[in-house]
Length: 282
Image (cartoon, rainbow, N blue to C red; front, side, top):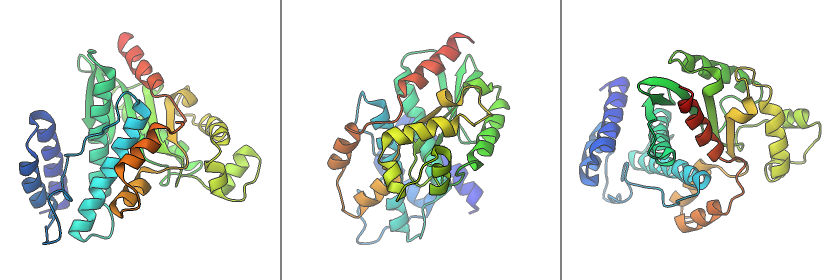
C-alpha cells in the first residue's frame, strides 16, 4: 500500500470516528491494519489506543490545548514504540493535532453559526454559510523555521489561506512553545543582551514576552502580527512531556497539575473573540 493511500485511509478513519464515535475496539482493529502496527505479547490494548484519549482539563483553554498537544504526541510515541520505528510519523501527528484543534475550537466557540473545518493543507478554517472568514495554523515549535526563516514561512501560510478567501488580517498562528525553536545568538541580537544558556532566557517569561513582541512585530505578512500570533509556553514542550510519560519519569496527574498552574504567555480568549468578530463582519 502506498504512503499516500495510507494517509488517506488514516484521515478517513479519523473523520469516521469524529462523526459516529466508533468504539475503541473497532478503531484499534482498523488502525492496526492501516498503520501496520503489530502487537506483540508484551503490548496491551491500553498501550495502543488510537483516538481514545480525551483531555481532562476544563475551563482553562491554554492548559487544555497544551494537554491536547501532549496527548497527541503521547499516542504517537506509543505507536512508534509498538511498531519498532525510530521516529514519529510527522504527517500522522499533523493530522491528529489539527483534528484535536478542530474539536477544541468547536468547544470554545460554543453554539455559534461558525463552522470549524480541518483542511488537508494543515489549517483550521472558520466558515459562515460556507464562506471562509478566518484561519488558524498550529505550530508546535519553530524548529523548522527559526529566526527570520519564520517570516517567509508565515508569508507562505498566509498566501495559502488567501487561496481559500481568508484575508491576511484574519490569519492567525498558535505556537505551542518557544523551546526547540530559537537560536541563542538570534535572541541575543534581538534583545541586545547575552545569556549564559538558552534555559536562562526560556525561564524568564518577562524576557520571552519582550522577545516575542520584538520578533513577531517583524512578520510583514500580517497587518497586526503581535495580535495574530499566540505563543503558549516557553520552557516546556509537549513532546518532551509525552516522552517523560512513556518512560515513567512522571505521570499524567503531575503533568496536569503543572500545566494548570503554568503562567501562559498568551490568552486564547483574544483569539476566540477575533474569530467571532470576523464572523460578525461577514
